[in-house]
Length: 148
Image (cartoon, rainbow, N blue to C red; front, side, top):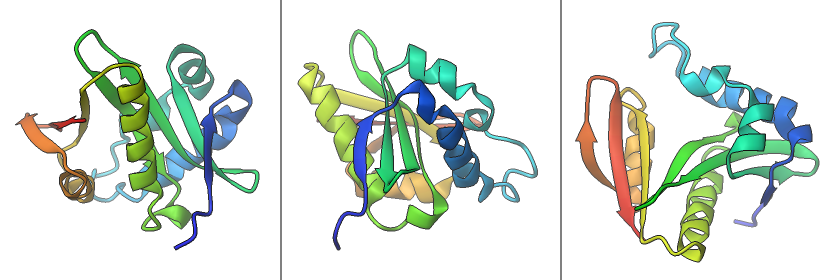
């Protein structure tokens, strides 16, 4: 399958499109979440872009995915990753995950971590398929890591 997107550093001008993309990506879980909104749906993406390492996936001029990372003392973290519903199932999620691994390796990290909502079982399955391992869970989140 030919790649239909490019990944680039996010800029504040991307915040409105990124907000729409994130909203659409997480809306598919609305029924499962019993109407509760996931935290990434309500952040100020202008602030997120200013304050955290962030990238967008673009197709044409449209933002179709987003990635936010954090670089801790001992490991790097994926703080938020989401794909526009029209681009799900086409390898973009895996592409952004691989991109995050490369960024972490480039900064000298050997471990990447993330947390996802316990009800987002498709995400957990995807991460396991991509080589992640579950390290903990609570009543809300599944915590995962990958040695890179």
